[in-house]
Amino acid sequence: GSSVVSSDQEAAAVVLIQWTGGQIGNDGVTTADYVGEMNPGSDVFCPTVGKRAIEDSTIVVMNTSNATINDVSITFKDRLGADVGTPMTNISIPANSQKTFNLFDAAFALPDNFLGAARVQSTGGAPLAVVATTHWGSAGGAYGTFAYNCAATAAAAETLYAPKVQRRV
Image (cartoon, rainbow, N blue to C red; front, side):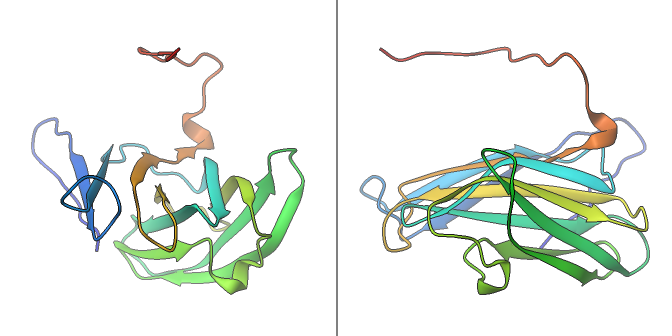
C-alpha cells in the first residue's frame, strides 16, 4: 500500500519496511527505511538497482496526482550507460495509488546479473514518488536490505552532500 501524510504545519515521515523469513539473525527479520518523498517529479531516476541470484530489487511507483494516469514508463541502463532490457510503457496507476515492480518480472527482460539504474517517467508530467528496495540473499531469503527515494530530475543539483562516509578496513 501507500499513504499520504499531510498537516497544517511542516511535517516529515520516515517509513520502516520489515520482512520476515529472511536469513539474517536468529529471528529471520530484516528491515529498511526511507524518508517520505517531498519532491515528486515526472522524470525520476533510481541510480542503483539489481537483478542477480543474490540481489533482488523492487521499484515502487506512486501517482501523487488526483487523477488516474496511463503514461508511466520504466527503462533501464547498465553500469556503462547502455540501454538494457525491455521498457515497460503505458503503465496505468490510479490517483494517489502505487504499483510495485520487481526486476525479476519477465516483462523487463533484464539479463541475469544485471546491475544498473532505472528511469521512471510520466510523459504527461504527472508527479511520481518512487522508492527502490533491494534484498540480498539466496533463494529469495533476505539477509540484508536497503531502501531509498529515487530522485526527480527537477530536484537535481550540481553539489551533493554526504554527511557520513565510512570505510571499513
